[in-house]
Length: 288
Length: 328
Image (cartoon, rainbow over all chains, first blue to last red; front, side, top):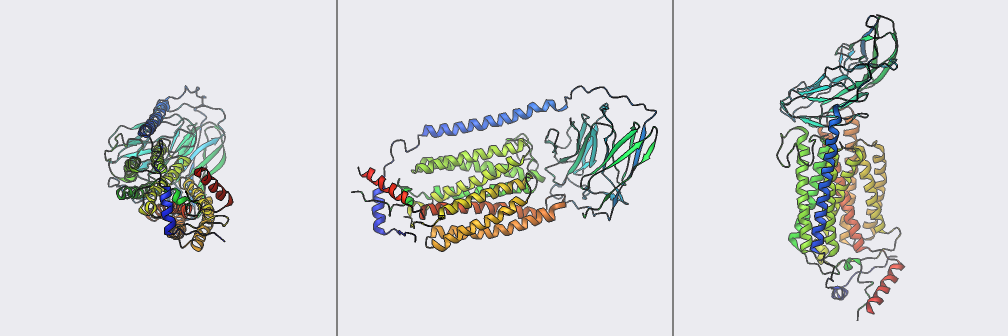
C-alpha cells in the first residue's frame, strides 16, 4: 500500500518558511566563468570548422594526381576479335515512371525515368564489360575525356563507362544550379555544385567500381551510374539493347551484363583471332 | 526548532529551496524557444525526406555566403531553410541561456541553460559534419538524436520556468510499488532513445527497417505500461495525469503514422524515382510526433520525480540523518 502524503496548508506554510535560503557564496555562477565557457565553446566550434575545411581542401589536389601507370601490354591489332549482341528484356516492358520536375521551373526536360528502358524488347542502359579473362594485362588510359552532360535536369548518358584514371568532363547545360554527388564504395566521395554557364568540372576515379551512383541532391530524380573499369573492353547498350566491344585479344572471357535494377548476369565466351561473336543476353521481368 | 521535513518536504519542494520568482516574459521566451525547436526538427525532417541533405555542398557557408538567399529551387529550399531556422534557434538558445543566467536564482536551472547552449552548439557542429563528411548514417543519426535531446532540454526549461512549477506547492504521493513509476518513465525514455537511433539509422540507409519496427512493439508495451500505472494510481495529481494522457495519445498517433510511413516509403516508394508527397508528409509527421512523444515522456518523468517520489527505507534514514546534522 503506498504511503500517501498530501500537503496541507499548514505544512506548506511551515515548509516554505523553513526552506527559504539565501544563496551562498559560489552558488551564483561567476559571470567570468560563464563568459569563459561561452568563449571556449565558440573557439572549439571554430577550430572544428577550420579543421574540417582543411581536411577537405587538402584532399582536393590528389584528385587528378594519379601515379605513373605501368606500360600497356601490347595487343596485335591483326588478331583482335569483336563481341556484339543484344540485351533483351524477357517479359512485358514496365511503364516508365513519371518524373515531377515542377519544383524547378528551369527543368523542362522529358519527364520519364530511365531506370528500365525497353524498346521493342531490347533493354537499354545495360553496362557490358569483360569481367575476367584479361589476366595481368594493362592498358593505356585514354587521354580523351568522357563527357557527362546535365541537360533538362537529367544526366546524359544515364549509364557511363570510363577507365580508371580517365578524365570525366561534367557539363551543365541547364539554366539552374546542379550538384554532382557520386556515392562510391571504393573511390573518394565528393559533392560539388555547378551553377549554369560555368566551366566543366574535370574529375576521375582511381579504382575499379561498377554501377557507382551519382545523384543531384537539388533535383532528387537526377540519378546516373558511372562504371569504372581497368580495361577498354566495355560498352553500354543503346535504347534498342545493342552493344559492341571491339579490339579484344583472342581468349576466353567472362562477360558481365549489369543493369541498375535487374542486377548482374555473366556469360563465358571464347573468341578466336579476328572472330566476331554474337553474345546475346536476356533479363527476366522480376515482378517490377 | 526545525521540524523534520521527511513528509512535507519531498524533492519537489527541495527544488524550491532557493525561492524562485515567476518571470512571465522569461517563461514565454522559453516556450517560444521550445516551439522553435520543433519547427527546426520538422525542417530537418523535410530535408531528409526530400533527399536534399547535400544540396548545399559547403558549410558553415551556403554557396560561399552566410545568409545570402540562393536560387530558391529544388532541394536547396529545404536545406537552406533548415540552416536558417537552425541559425535562428542557436541565437534564441544563446538569448535564453544568457537571460536565465541573469535572472534565474536556481543554480541547477542556470546550469541547464548552459547545457542547452552547449547542446545546440554540438548539434550545429554535427549538422556541419554531416555535410562535410557526406552524411554517414551514424553521423546523421547522431544529428537527429541530439536534435531531440535539445528539444527535451528546451521543453524542460519551459516547464521549470512556468508559473505552476515556480509558485505551486507540489502535491506528493510516495510510490512503494516496484518497479516504481519513476523507473518506468526512465525506462520509457530509454526505449524511445533506442527507437530514435534505430529509426535514424534506417532513415539514413545505415540499417534495415525491421529493428525499428520490432522495437516499436517494445516501445508500445513499455509506454502503455507507464501510462496505465500513472493514470490508474496517480490520476489525482494533475501534473502527472496530463502528461500521461498526452503520452498515450501521441503513442497511438505515432504508431499509426509509423504504419503509414512504412507503407508510403518502404512498400509504395520502393521503385519511386523521387520522394513523393505522401511519403514526405508521413515521414516528416512521424519525426515531429516522435519528438513530441519523447519530450512528453521526459515531462512525465520530471513530474513523477517531483510528485511521486520513491519511498524506501534508505531514503527515510538518510533524510533523518540529514536533519540531525542540520539541527546540530
